[in-house]
Structure formats: C-alpha cells, structure tokens
Length: 249
Image 1 (cartoon, rainbow, N blue to C red):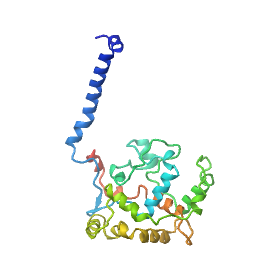
Image 2 (cartoon, one colour):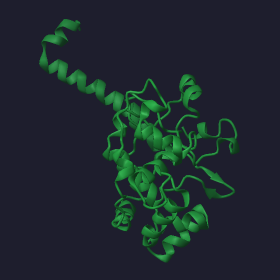
Image 3 (cartoon, rainbow, N blue to C red):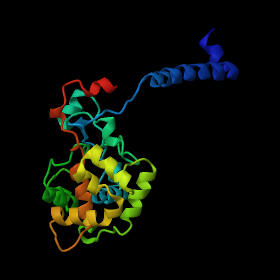
Image 4 (cartoon, rainbow, N blue to C red):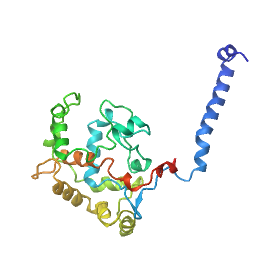
C-alpha cells in the first residue's frame, strides 16, 4: 500500500494509527504485570530510611509550591553520567513515593534540587532566598524577602497531615499507626510522624534548628529552608552495593 493512499484516506489513516498506538501501549503496559515492584526498597538494619516529611517540612513544601519554585527547578536527576557528575546519584522512585504531587519537573532555569539538602548551610539558603545575586552573581532568581517577615501559619497542620494520610502517606493517628511506624522508621521518626502532635513537633523542630537565624518567631523561611535541607538526604548510597538499585528497574 502506497503511503499516499494512507494519507488521503481518513479511514485507513485512523485504523492504522490506532493499531500503531495499540502496539506501543501494549509494549509499555504488559511488562508492568510481570514486575513485582518498581519502587526500590531502601532499608538499613531493617529500618526504612525514606520517610514522610515532618510537619515543618510539609509546610515548607507548601510554600515551595506556592512561590512557584518548581517552575524553574526540577527535582529528578536522570540516570545519565553528566547529570550524576553535576548533581549526584540518580533519583530513586522511592524518594518520591510520599510526594503529592511529586516535583520532578522538566524546567531547569535553575539547577536541579533533588540533592540540594545539606549541600549548603541554613544561612546560605536564607541569604540566597533574600538576595540570590549576593551569593550567585549570575542568578536570575527573584528576591523573596517576605519569607523572613511572614510568620508561618501552622494551626491547621494536623488537618494537613491527616489529609495526606488519606492518600497513603503513613502519618499516625491511632496507636496502631504509631506502633507500625516505630517498626518501619524507628522511634524518633515515628514521633515526628504523629499527626496528633503535629503542631508541637513543628514548633520544636523550628525552634531547635533555628533555620532562619531568628529565635523569636517561626517564619515561612524556617519552613522552606527545612524542606530544602531534607531533599536528597534520606538515602546514604555508601551503604548499598553498586547495582543494588538497578535490580528494581
């Protein structure tokens, strides 16, 4: 059949297009039924190291999305040599399993932030958010001075965690939830994931770490820096053999 015949006959074009799409769809979908899991198991001494965000980090993530940071920064390192050299180990599916929605993105006006956690000090992040060009002269990022002025709203943090629990994030509400989290993440992390103590946990983390350098109040800067500082820090790749994570592909 000549290609011209297909192009000039709507019936043939629709039928053959449908067949091609079906073949492509089957090639992508069918293998999924033969794979037990595509999310990596990340455990050290039987304890899961990838955990849900703490209450303060949840609020920081909310602010990150509110300010549109995802429009210029991605949070997914692709499995290519050039990306690994610049950003670090490629992103694992497990690292995004508690994100609703995930922040993978594809726009990189600014660098990828998947492993920015602990790369810089809290003071650096504060200065960078206040006046980006004071630490990165070539930056085109806007200033965010209000983050240091705005007090953090967190009275509804318990409700926020319970809403996330409804979509599968394992925050604890009952004692059974809490006990299960102790087994999965350890006692210290389980305490931070207790939705009933969300407000107290948020205040304690903010005041103890003093992310914004101001101990007199808890600001939006505290929350955003807390979120940035945890990105990419939950997996210690030195504790896993080379090729371990590739077995889940």
